[in-house]
Length: 425
Image (cartoon, rainbow, N blue to C red; front, side, top):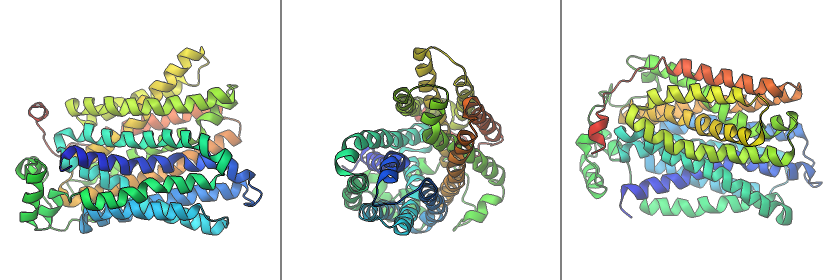
């Protein structure tokens, strides 16, 4: 089990929990609203949903920064355990404020998972493979979403909505102790914090070269870099561009996953097809992540990301056009291919262009600001649906967001030169 592949698999499983969190409320919400013991109305449901996203935003910001101080391993285990315990507690409450508080705290715990996982996989696979490493781990996100949707079909009707949170917590409760025994600390982090001998031991166990891992990286600006470093040269320009791009990227991800079925209903498609579109969208996302990883390793995350955002905008705009059903499903699939992996190429760029003592902080802030987009996406879609403007303006609005993502990502500048040809050998 002492292999780089085992580390990546553990991180993939952790990110799968993020995918569970993405759709579990959407899957359980109809039953929660119909539950006479719950007395939940749509306004309260919106508050619960928002609380979780706000928690994830704050978690990504604060826990991401703590990762560069405390270490990747400790933070990852804490994130998985906190999310799982708090999610389990949700399965045993009918009190609105207790549920909302648990949802917020669970989101806060899980918020540190994604940026930490991406930082670790970048360090264990090497920066030249940042694109494929990041996108491979992120397939867990959409696999988790698809599995949760299937789980809901079998659990909610016979066992009630509480069962989704109880069963959904079990994988994390198993994963946390497994990670405690099998997940190593990042050699890059150990080296930066002065634990050179331990760093070399871990690097030897996992077939890593510390010299290779550190090659081509922007020099450490200071021994204990923090968030303020991101607002100084040479990081300032990239920081602002990446933060805005992340906002746009996650606005698309959460906006589409939340409102695509309802927008399709307003476009006069039946509910079966509307849910089918959501499934095909996420299947396209998994395929897109694999393709994006390979392309970005060859052409860089920045170049690939620019193309991905532009194609996202194109296919989103095409969804507003009435077309034969087979063609429409194809366009939905291609939309998933490009929309969901665009943001992951942004993460890959961040991992590739920041040194070890700043990487998790940069990743956490990018993910945290992106979560503001995750909150805004469902709000934008909800507003358009409420005003009966979702078709076609929902798709046009999302297409404009995709173009804006391309524009801001084009303002970034690579800070490290990587020999991608030699990395393949």
